[in-house]
Length: 249
Image (cartoon, rainbow, N blue to C red; front, side):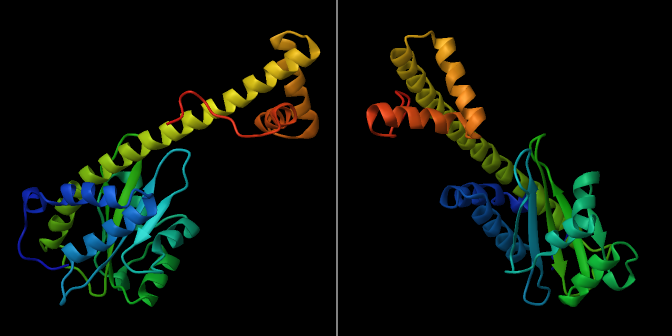
């Protein structure tokens, strides 16, 4: 990473806005992170001192999302395979992890070998400050050793602090969209089940509780989801499986 001096966070004041606009163009997690990784490598690298960036974001009940500025970089997957590494350590400790010279690093033996095989000699992992239920890290890989006392480390930390603001907002928006989709799916499922329950009540002249029990028993005996059984009942009565709720857009 180049070192024009030790910047203040204000030197990257445009980063958060850039990421917000990027998310509007690429609302998918992988595409957004890919753009962020490429942007980070471009902002913090130079022709004389190039670097690659890889980003990992972990959210509850979601698979880890990873993207890199270089296709096939895959160092985060190696950390997961080996069970540890600078990125995982940075997320676990909530602190910056610097490996200034991989030739002298004694930790993470297999990981270090893999990084050196790709031509890297230094690694810098900086945790992103996200919501309480999410964790993230930006890891930079450089083909030359890093001077521990250089201002490049401070520069990278300043960039990540600003990037965290845009990333946090993007994840918050994504969570809201996922919640909306989940509620819509739940309402659709509830509608199908209610329709099927009503049909069974009419056919068997039974109570709602008895009709629902018939649906649940059929679900268990056929090893099918309750919604699938209900949809089959609705299809047999109405001749179609399409249903809608009054909450549909």
